[in-house]
Image (cartoon, rainbow over all chains, first blue to last red; front, side, top):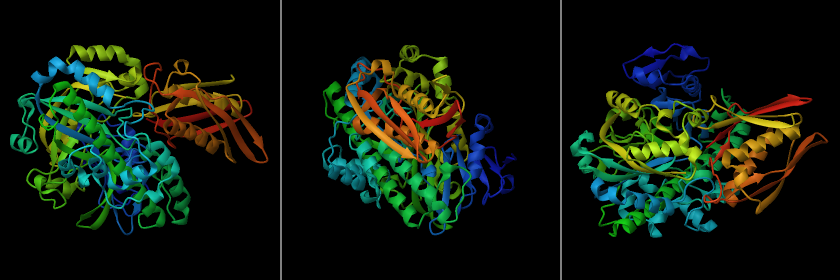
Length: 477
Length: 144
């Protein structure tokens, strides 16, 4: 496959490379990152370039790797009148996303109580296979969660009103309609509010040292002060609920595609015209799942605050436990670009609006929108901000994490969970895991070097580094 | 070869894939069912305090296995359980395949069970069921 160099960070596959491509495919990667990308990325991003109504380019971010239909790291924008919507472009874990909570604590405060803190958090935040949440929902409650998202949680006492201004879309995406969500999705989701799940989902206690702050003014504006400051990162999504929504509508779309004259190169790119009844129903159901995910992270935040308060014997307010931001990385949203209203699909990709974006809350109009990128549990994560160049070049999108390079089965062959846990403890990272085999699957060597990935988006100008966050404690399902 | 399965290393970077085999459609279903059970938890650490009987029918064996495995994932979440076993039968009658079986397991308990992966769904990626006579095989990728 021909891959042309556009710049040191951008590579393009022309439409002549695959029959049916409507636009070129562009991959963001410095050469060292490009070499680590699996062949699935190239095949899948060019499949995406064939979908009806696609605008400009099918994009893949530097953390890209093979996914279902779209690659992980995939971004594609479709004309909101003539284009399609695809669950494979959103990701099955709808609104899987990242949340970052700041504190006024330092590593010196936390280290003597780290074991107790992680035990407390592990006890309070359910994780792993089939774990149920502490919030008991009625069907009516879940309907309210689907529509109100994190706002419902705050109204019920699971959070602070000021949290909402620091969540993408205020923690509540409009256009959610519970009547188009299946009973199966409801049954799967009704006991999962406030749970982490497993796989690559986690809750991490991290430290920000002074030498790892790259933009002190922006960091300060976002509440990041350095001096070994403790922050907490949460990575999870809409759990089985969101996956069931995706599965339900993949079936609906597979049946509807012939009627709409659509054929796709991969069953998992099943789609429907956005304005068709099927497309609108999926969009409304997806928004329900997105709101469920915002609510999920909000309840987890509440438990994290309670856990810290119990261990440090001070209220969460006294500990300064404000949100830095909460951002989705699996979603489709209508946004305005020079081409008009576009339905932007981001799958394993983060919205990265710059300071010039009027969609942002006022407090982010000088900094740009915070972007939270999770690395492996051994290496560290990054806080970044979006740029106006991202809006111009990548439909306001950037990376979401480091991206896997090794399968789970291979990773388990290289290390045992208990062995990894011990090694990490010796390096000052305390890990609590429900599943030791799941822990081994998430070893750092199974992921790309996140610094190379971050370097790509910074050099390309689509995101700006603010701070690096180093893990000291991790909870995994 | 009544039934067997093996996990595949290289076809699902972020998720889990397995191949199941059997000398009949029924044994194939047993192999795939066992693979999914073992993806979620070590069945030897799970007791039999919960069960649910299921019957599903489809004209296509491939669609039937997909629905059967998806139903197991559904009950894992809806009932909050993991499985010890799922004895089943597969029959062919009047142009349709029917799988009938009992999901048997226990509520999730991280203190007593060896829990593994929280499977979110069965995917269509590389999914296939093929075979005839005494050799049947399925490839399944599960999203975790």
